[in-house]
Each structure stands twice: as C-alpha cells, then as structure tokens.
Length: 270
Image (cartoon, rainbow, N blue to C red; front, side, top):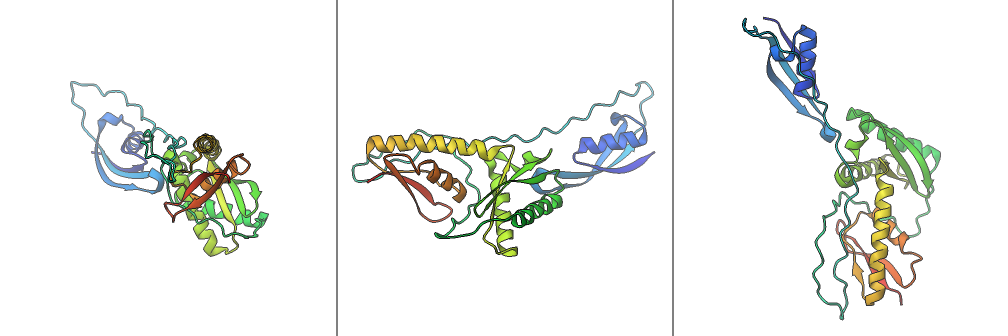
C-alpha cells in the first residue's frame, strides 16, 4: 500500500497534493492528520499521512473533488458609536441608541507639546524595512511603500494578496501592527518618528467616517449648548477628530482621561 506525507495550508490542500503525487483521486486516500500549526494572522499549516486505499471491485474510482479555495477575510471600517450623553449641570441623562461597538485596539500616546521632529527619507526606509521583516517572518505576501512624509509621521500603504489579513475586522489587526512597528522603531531608532500604516484604503475611509460623525456631534453640541464626550479612540484617531473640528465655528475640542480610555470632548466655544 503506497504511503506519503504532505503539507498544506489546509487538510484539503494537503490531500490534493498527496493525490497528485500518488497519481490517484482524493477519494482513494486514507488520511491521518499528523500535525496542525496555526501561525500569525490566521495562517496555518497542516501535515498529513496519506495512503492509497484498495478500491472495492464493484465500484469504479470517483473523479477527484476540486479543492475549495479559502475565502479571503473581509474587512470594513468600524461602525461609529454615537457620543455619550452631553455633560454639564443642565445636561439630562438620556439613553443613547445602541450601535455596533468599535474595536478599540492598542493605543499610542499622543506626542508631547512642542515636539519638533521631521521624518526623512532615511527614516521612511527604516520603517519600510522593519515592516517587510515582520510580514516576512509571518510568511505573508505583503509589500509596504511610503506615500507621504507628514511632520514626524511616515504614511505607509500596504499592498499584496495577503493584505486583508493585516487589516482585520474593523482595522484591529492594522492598529496592532502599527502599534508594534512604532514600539520597535521607538526603541531601535530613537528618533521620534512614527509610522501610520494603511491597507486596502481602510484609514482613508475611516477618516471620512470619523470626520462626518464628529461634525454631526458638533452640530448637536452647538444646538444644546452642552459638552459631548466621544467614545475612547486611539491617539491617531483622536487627532482626526481634533483636525476635523479645528476650524468648526462654535465648538472646541480637547482630550481627557487615561489610556486606553482617553476620549475627545466636544464643547461649546466660549
């Protein structure tokens, strides 16, 4: 009886490889799973032992089944949560309509006031090389390229067939990767430069969503004359809200609280 050991990303893929090597259909194999290893970002490896079973004389061998392709993970911007009940002595405790809770991943400390750091092309190359090293260790087909230098920030876009794994649901994997890159870069390079990482245009769509939400809340703040507190956001998303309302007449913004529960407050302008 012919026996072989093969590996693949799934049992079906390993079985298909074994069947091709042995010159038989998948249905003619007896399969034993020897090892299954789950790697980073949902990737896995399976090792099997396959042996050719003796087909019953009365039944002809069936045609091989087509291997099913694993679907790519979906990603989409997180749905906004409405602002909490406005604060203040005159504020009423109102119930806010429930909404899908945004996945707030790891956060980054906001830069101290007066920080004067400008990223260079050399800084950008160091960050791109760091990202390529990380995704290479995870065996992901992802390429990173610099799209813009903006003060101390290097904007980096990810591309490649595995980029969806690095975005994840509501961008939580992308946030975690960005945090990891900035932690490593801060210790290795110690130059104050940070990376903003995007994939599948997620950040652009998320920025548009946050900006529209902040402006709707600001209109409500002006109407009621009371402060409103947004849900906790990572530092780079809080900056989006501050920027969106920096020239918005009638309101002012500031942050309060400690990480990871630091929030943006939208208040009537004095």
